[in-house]
Image (tube, helix red, strand yellow):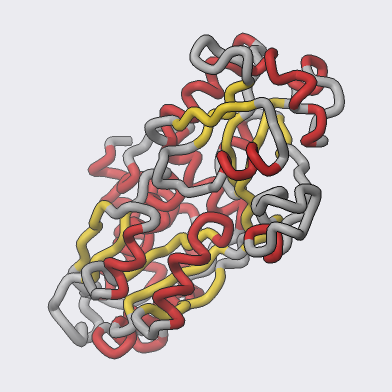
Length: 321
């Protein structure tokens, strides 16, 4: 089916699900709702699911490319209006700064919980005995080395703007590794696909929910358990002189956030966003439509909507019915 036909079919299904014409009520404002667009597929697809549902209600929207950290200051200023994926492990501090200042609002958590940390394919347990325990890494560091890092191992991190404090973790845990940043999520997982096909050593940044876990057998490295004190108090943890001597949070939140004026300006749209609630498997599927099936992010959002009529019906607010 062509992308055009997919979009048409998706809108037909959505119209039936909602049970009302596209403009069942008059939007409170004709100004476009500016939706943050980051550089990984699940966020891009979820942003476009929200966009298509908001447009079905009659709202004007605009998807705006945004840095994963700078987007919060922009939203606090009203230059952006909506973020559908706020990850605790990467974005908590930037997000909460704006919430505490009254410039953003927390629109609620998805059912999905998150984890973001070092990850390796399962075959690495034969190459590096002792994994997933982080203490096994130093004994195998040279096996993870590439020419630019040898004799140190390479840790393949995400893009630089995905601030994860990996250099601080390496220093605090005295790991014989060097951080190398991938230029994009596509580049990050392109290297994983290549290494996996050849069963070559690799340890890289990964997260869940994500499509990767469904396509490649692998595990997260188990670092010391995360506590807030790990990043605040050097005396906490295995290194009494350094912070970040721990892993990232397990079971972290995945939230939606909005500019503080959103609810007043687009009241019915706010209720829709508040109702939207993705589970982990739902996000896995959304990302896979783009990264595995090869759909554009717009077409992936349309396909996801087609496949989840019951969820869409439950999310539609009473004010639009």
